[in-house]
Image 1 (tube, one colour):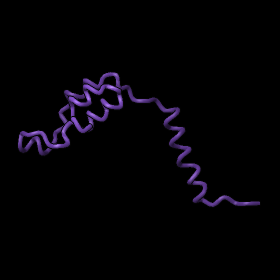
Image 2 (cartoon, rainbow, N blue to C red; image 1 turned 45 degrees about the horizontal axis):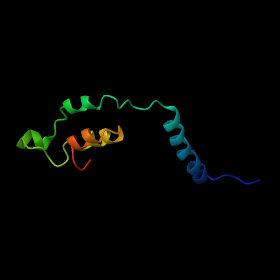
Image 3 (tube, one colour; image 1 turned 180 degrees about the vertical axis):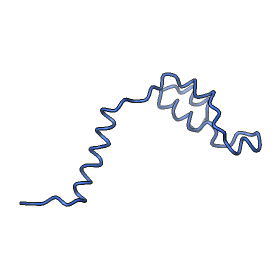
Image 4 (cartoon, helix red, strand yellow; image 1 turned 135 degrees about the vertical axis):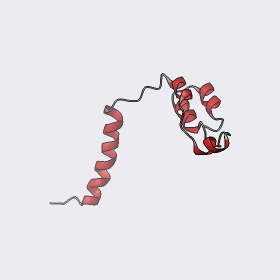
Length: 80
């Protein structure tokens, strides 16, 4: 009788857990992506200098991209 090592068990369990979570857990609602534009994230660079830093809006841009709103994604950050 063959035994399964803990390493092999984790190689099966961890990906299976992620697949289970992605399939059965509720997905976020991206229908209100425009509300993200009003968030004040408190960027330290922006708070000190008053200029937007190179990363400002990048997260919101990626969220809008995954919500399939390319115009809003480009509006938040061109590289997103």
